[in-house]
Image (cartoon, rainbow, N blue to C red):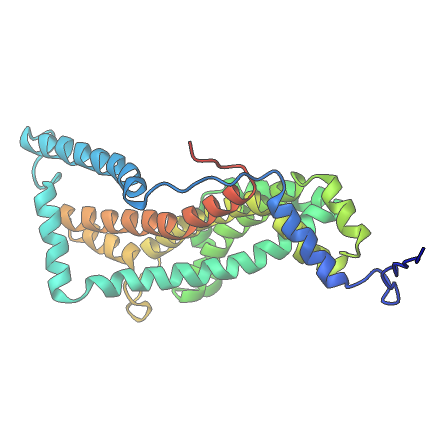
Length: 303
């Protein structure tokens, strides 16, 4: 009877392809206990998501128009929705509206990206080094609760009326939120994942890249969302106060100009634009990313 031999896999390369094992672990963490759910038709999904906000907006506009009609405030203090719309249309026809929006959005995006870079490194250090957490963890929480506008006078003294002042306020507003979000995400990682990563050689930077950050994504993305909200709020606070001709005009400066002219249509138009930009970035960027991450981990399931 012929005998057959099966050759054992060679171990000449040590534990095998370490990078392949790490990538496999990362994919396994993503797929662990996740459920595959059939997607609903896009039209039904879009309708179910768009209809409630549209109804809410219609109710707000109706109440606003009623308040204008019954003169809860004099018309020069509370203009109608139509008057605010005409103010926006006028700035659009002047060709200045998009430049105001772009100035603030570009500042906010640059400040937020810098905050992500600093906050991520700081969050990892605080999360993994006990001495650092004990030393500056409470300080980060305190900074997160500090109103961003409180930094504006100090930043003006340090840097004058310049872009550096605006970006300093944005960084001080956003970095603590991003760092604390990452710390919370790392704290929620199962120790089993970390031990499994160390077993196959995912230590140091490889462990951070393939195990720590992917496993902490839900908390990290929540921190990024909050960081953007703080970044946008900080930017508006800085633009309201830091006003100089060579800085350009953002939405915060536009709001302050309306106050100086006592033009409530102008003021409400600026507030509306600030609100639209903030909500738009949340819905178009952060919400889809968060849903994808949560769904891939079985934390978000469509009914």
